[in-house]
Amino acid sequence: MSEFSTYIESKKYQTKYRTEFITITKDVDSVIENSKIKNGIILIQTLHTTCGIWVNENEKNLIGPSEVLGYTSDLRKVLDNFASPTLEYGHNDVRDNNNINGKRDTHLCEPDENGVIHECINGHAHAQALLLHPSISLIVEDGKLLKGSWQEIMLVELDHDRERTVSFLVSGEK
Amino acid sequence: MSEFSTYIESKKYQTKYRTEFITITKDVDSVIENSKIKNGIILIQTLHTTCGIWVNENEKNLIGPSEVLGYTSDLRKVLDNFASPTLEYGHNDVRDNNNINGKRDTHLCEPDENGVIHECINGHAHAQALLLHPSISLIVEDGKLLKGSWQEIMLVELDHDRERTVSFLVSGEK
Amino acid sequence: MSEFSTYIESKKYQTKYRTEFITITKDVDSVIENSKIKNGIILIQTLHTTCGIWVNENEKNLIGPSEVLGYTSDLRKVLDNFASPTLEYGHNDVRDNNNINGKRDTHLCEPDENGVIHECINGHAHAQALLLHPSISLIVEDGKLLKGSWQEIMLVELDHDRERTVSFLVSGEK
Image (cartoon, rainbow over all chains, first blue to last red):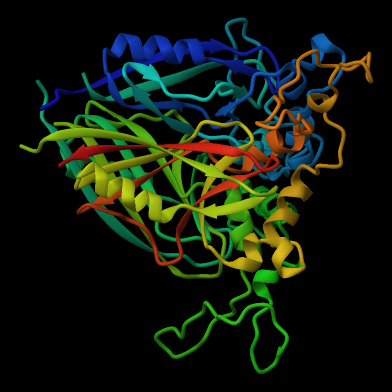
């Protein structure tokens, strides 16, 4: 009879730009090692609504960064074609002194550590979140993440640069 | 050594219109409480093919309802732009007395409790289901659902008004 | 007190064409039976980046095959409308003797058992993978897969014909 155990850990990531794909596979490996669990599930969950988890190939032309290479990554094009940041969203129509008839009377953005209130226009980011995952579960076998040759675990930023938290649960037998 | 346990519960929801987003977070909380499980996984699963589970912000302009506000929600626009209900789908081309050469010889719809057979044209709803999730797993920590400030669990209706079943499994240590 | 157990099994599938939807529900049932687990989770995971798992209706006009019926399935149209195989992708711009200025200096494709190197143009397949799932978890209750009347588990090929591996983990109480 095997001993059942669970293990929870969270990590913070500072994202740098919109549609950044951050490979976090090493952190997933580290969490599994910390858990000492041999066989079971690792559940990887964001705590946010304008970023997501994805599992795919870490190939620069596919996922970027656009800035460094001088062209736009394939997936930024695909995400923006699906829900363009330049379209109008009711979610962006915030009622304030400059827009008395705005559709929303709440304002999501909060001042950062310098007191600057960032741009809150992120209707497209909520919509693009339809294409990613709030959480993904993967198999842990013999104390290792089970994955294919090209599979990498990624945190995908759909909003502006922000601090993001990803939580991990490992559940299984030691 | 912790005691492993599983707990399963199902709930029914009467949806009211196409692209309705129903927040079910309180029901998720209730299921976790009923399970008495402290640390583990809650798996939220629909039993249907034209609705889905989503985790995002419950903000009226983003998710609707269009009817009340007098305009179309952002996500109905995005879903319909992805797979419009007005396009032709082979799935909708049902062979019957009015359409001898239809592509399908089965008919999904059944009479409701009043004997009325509802419209079965739902190819778009199956396609839009690509954007949602048949199931989502989230972390349970210290007997509570782990979620971010803006995260709500939603059942999303992609078809017409129907009764829907969502099943919940909590798996972990008491 | 219940006895916790995990069970892992992998199966191989030879896909035949792009946007093939292969129903694997019987294999899921078989894995659950082999696991002897009564209540818990089955996690179904691909080990690839250009195919995915989906749960929906196995209806021929919806999912194909296009070849047999003489028309294109609804979902091939929807997938290709989302990320067309005919668009340009940076991921496809491979640097070789014929394309000195290509954006990528690695080449994913390997010779098959006959020494033939297949076409590697699969940027669209990575992008379409946004619509599917690298893994899906479903509920096991009383030793059976919990699913609705129309739900079938599918492996979806987004690339050309290839051998694919799907791994299954069952985790729960015997």
